[in-house]
View 1 (cartoon, rainbow, N blue to C red):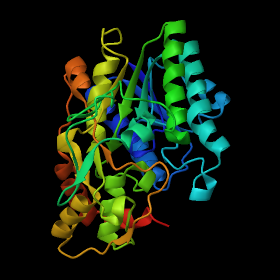
View 2: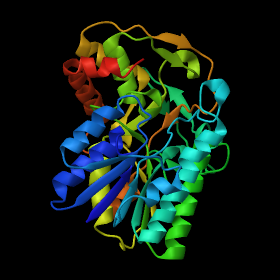
View 3: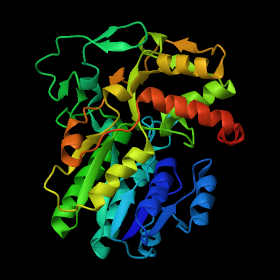
View 4: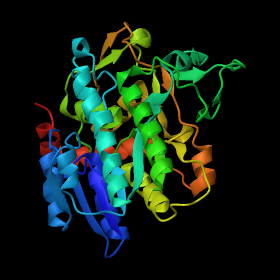
Length: 359
């Protein structure tokens, strides 16, 4: 099998590449990355040491993709993942840059798949779901997190006590970032149908774990743990400034497990678009993450408060992953608490790496 990974020097892309190398003897694995993320050189060197070819290039440039060797599968991990991207006033990039990375890049990848007859696994995002509808989820304040308040409105389609399911609304607003990913999903499915190559779309929640590159837009769990370890300034933003907003998390290795199954069954009669995430056991609030860090680092951690809620922030997101479990027999291997504890332990032994991630 020949596998091409876009964004291969990011945390997820690199971990997928190394897992594929371990699980698929004889597979030819290569990737492309523009090396724009701080710390990506670390993974470039590790991958090359494993015999995995890394090309310095940019998915926004069709010529860069056309110069790559043929592949049987493309796993698309390349994206600008920040929900505030496109909002220059909020510190994000310009809209044109966001669209270039996340949509034009996808179109170039799809052209590669069409020309080489390669299958595609597209890592999408839970951010395709409607912010307005997510903010309608009934919540109450618990001791350490926002908790679901029953009953759930009958018209809140796609939501249950298990979390957000695939039929949840994708109506605007979903953020400019979410819009580029939703458009990418649609184009990927249409290309696969029109040109006869397999496409799997995985709507991923937060992915995190030891070795992540630590930017807040690449995974709040690792960013928070690293910042707690280094004593960097932290702030609970929005929803009363209590840190009780909730997200779920899964590991990159869990994503690799799913992707291997999908590449090995291109014609399996299951839905092409599915939610992938940590679910109820994989969910924590920022306050709960802070308390785990205080226990593991054996000190009090100061966190400022800001009650003002930013555009696109949501108070509660938990993935309803029942369909991915039914379709692929997949479930997360670690709870959110276990992931945070692993991050804390790894950070204690890799503080020089972590310090170099922050300017």
